[in-house]
Image 1 (cartoon, rainbow, N blue to C red):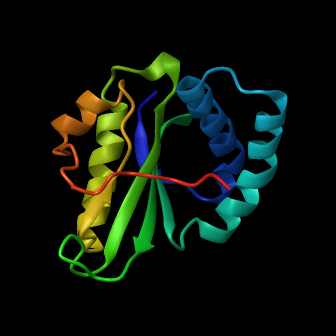
Image 2 (cartoon, rainbow, N blue to C red; image 1 turned 90 degrees about the horizontal axis):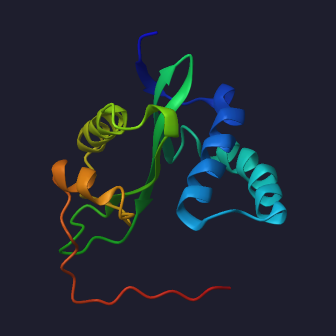
Length: 155
């Protein structure tokens, strides 16, 4: 079966939920029933609000979605790092375990990067896993050299 590439739509929600859960399990280890239930409940309404508005999900299909990368558009006040204030946050880059090392994530990422250029984003940001880091480097991503320290407040 040949691989096709396109953008996910609301028709893909069930598959996207499964892929998100698989990604999270790979990233964080086994998920609790509560975590799985939360993602399964919260993700479809999130996708309904954002997909095609400020979120695009690039996918590779081989009968089913076998690889994906999510691009969230974020508008910030302009600054020297973001002269137009338009950035993209890249996340949930995932390929099904039985389809890895076939260039699918690379192809999906190249399409996403092309979209980012076409819509004139200033920068793409991501937090790389150890597994994804070599791919991102090959695609031109570099370690962030900001003097600011990443921080967060969990609410």
